[in-house]
Image 1: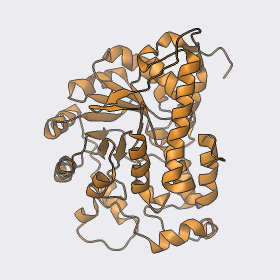
Image 2: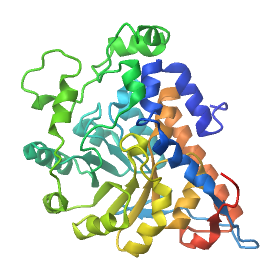
Image 3: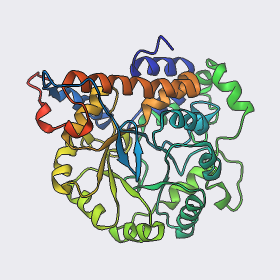
Length: 384
């Protein structure tokens, strides 16, 4: 763990242990990956303006999201097929999230059941949901999450069709993965991943597999089923329906426009996740960080704002909160940790960001999150 001194080091370890097609699935984005790169580089366009001679002998990083007080303004975002990256999958991540006391969100397309995940996580637990063409499937998910005491739902709205992820096309990656002549050596060169993958549990979308009437054994049958369920006719009325059906904390994930953030609040959401889906969906989509301030100005504290995407440093969290976010969420950083070292790797990713953020608060002259203000940052004069 001493080698993992930042998120980039965890990424390097993940690259070393994962087969090339699997690492590219984790690390890649849509088309030319402009949205992916801009999500992180957006943070470089802001300078910090620290306050001096402020008493920071005691600092607090506590905040509240999804109705719970948490020790650090960070949550773990939903990621599909997490078992691609480590045999212990979501359960290893849940262990680290529980130890840190921060929320973790299970994906509809995860590899752990709603029930098993609910039992494993002692921190606030969330479920990421879609409104499918098959409303019965969405209703089933709502009731299963309710029965397991989930603390909130996260509705993803930016995945009406899959983005064009060209690394996966080049690698011939199918989900669940299968060997192809092109990808064979990528898997063969990583036996530490491939042998447990061959001998362990199937790479199934376990929460939707039962809805497929007859599985043919084709490795993309479940993916085809799920892709065919995404409903392009969704409107804000459907969000109102879900909010009423659930009756608890609800986040809408995939918002980049202030007017859409207002519509989410009007439809019954109490949180918006400002996100471009990690640059994996719409190419050239705006960087989430750049949309925090205008969305915060429009909402004026009406509902919570989570900045989702591009977080690689504790200073990134500082900048997002100074612009108006209430918390941030990460996906790739904790998955790099998971691939590199299982639960310990995820713990390391969380610890790195927390330590860097606390250091940034002290050096920036803020003793609590409420003291983070827009005047503590400025657009950079550097020629980025």
